[in-house]
Each structure stands twice: as structure tokens, then as C-alpha cells.
Length: 113
Length: 110
Image (cartoon, rainbow over all chains, first blue to last red; front, side):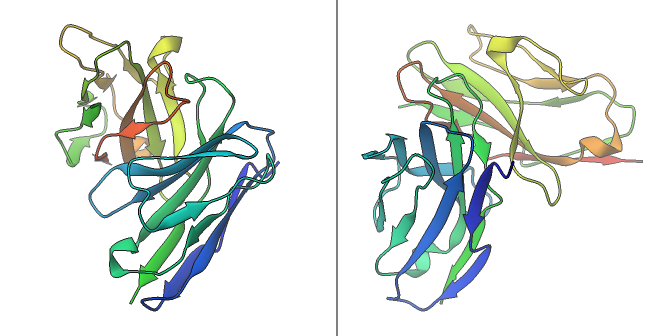
């Protein structure tokens, strides 16, 4: 049982490039989330999804897009990479209940140069 | 707006000493509070949640609504407790979206 799987683990992008961070979960969770963690800061919510076909913005959505075509997958898209998007990105998922724990992936460390 | 504050970025104690990681929050409704932990080279994972009122790995946390706090405590720290600890909050109708504190790095010295 892999839980939440994120790929890639590391990536370096040039300013203006685009990329997709992949996230997949095998626990049949309804809710999925993308967070970013900047040095010395807590995790901040970028986007979330409560089920296939349903997504919504979190606290820091600018510069990102998401889609949720299946229950399992929740990719995060960066269209025009900017240095401010250098961060560690975490994907998480949980059952459909606010007091259920979130299960996290290993994270993707992204550098924009 | 909801907010979680962890006033200590770094906390160092010796093995066997008591440890308390502070967490204060602001939220207008009834919050649901969690402590998450990330050990070296491991994933961020749930340590405990206030609704369960349980003790995990010797840690406890009590929700104090009057002081809007959810401090994490352990009477005798162990070296394996060294990790990054995050306090997090969600509201009842927020689809589980978490607001995190800045995190506290706990180091337990032998």
C-alpha cells in the first residue's frame, strides 16, 4: 500500500518553464490537497479537491492550476515558473470528514532559477 | 481569519526532561486541532488530534478554549522524539483544509 505518491522528488526549472507535479493516492480518499512549504514557514494550502471533477482555491493559488479527473490523481500545474515558486510541495489526502487525518506524500523539492 | 502560532522555532531539551511545545490559535468557531510530526527522512504524519483525547508515544495535548491553546506535552523526552512538530487547525465545514503553524524543531540531547 503506497499511500500518497508524489513525483518527481526533485526538480530544477528555469524561469518561464512549465511543469506538472504528480500526486496519486491508493486509499480511495475523497479529499486531496496541495500545500507548499517555504523555509521557516508552515505549510500553506494551494488548492484542494473534495472529489473527482471538483477543485477549489486555497490560500496561495496564484501561479498554479489543478485538475481532478479521477479519485486517485491530483496533479498540480505550474504554467510560468517564477523564483517565488521555489519551495517544497506536499500533496495530501484524507477521507470525507474534517477530523480525519491527512496522509502526506514525501514532497517535491522545486527550485526555479 | 484563522491562524495558528507556534512561538518557538527551535526547542532543545535533554533526555528524560519534560518537554512542552506551545501552540496558540485564533478561530471564530469550534476548531479541530491536530499535531503533525515529521521525523528525519520520513513523511509528515499525524501524531494526535484533540478529538481523540489520546496519548501517542507518551505525548498528550489538551485543548484549552479559554486560552485558545493546544500545547503538546511529554513528561520524559526521548532522543527519538527529535523531529519537526506542526500544530494545525481546521474548522467543521472547511473540507478538512488545514491551517498550519510555522513548526517547532525539537532536539532531544542524550
